[in-house]
Image 1 (tube, protein in one colour):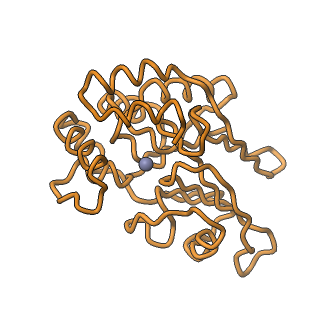
Image 2 (spheres, rainbow, N blue to C red):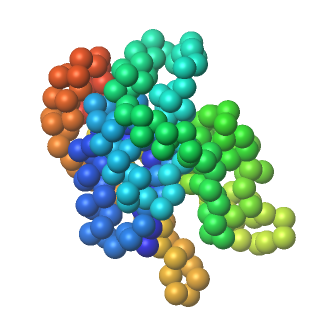
Length: 233
Ligand code: ZN
């Protein structure tokens, strides 16, 4: 069984809780769909942990922003402020590690990207069925896992041309900053069984939100980044 996670956003408490729950369920490898940093107070610790425990780690838009000198005009002002804080805080070795992350990974079962498969570098969101249908031309595997929107969801899509089995695009939600009204950290497990069938399950896990909030406040990051964690928005 593997665990698939996304959008940790420097929240070490949430990441640890997800890894512990995944291990309990039997996950022996992990795929991380990116945005390991940005918003939360522990970017270095999160990249360190993810680099050691995940077989695949992809680049997210916040990771990209944190390691570049690009201007941040397309981020909203408070997100840009968090990116600047992360740029100052991120150690050189983790900056280099993030710079080497790919935008896409594919195996026989699934395609993995941060935002969407047609043009991963464009950071498009999959928020609706229409978005999912638009993105269906971007992968030919039975499954496609995305993150980026922090909204867990799954869409059944028509089969690829030469097959009769439906395909699924799955948004794995967010570990470190869920935005679907449920503050618990979110991830999925992917189990490929001996009979060849696959099972994907959404998991939610409670974590020490007050500890993550204390660190955000102590770092001088914006108060809303702390309060939104307890609301899951
Ligand atoms: Zn994100």
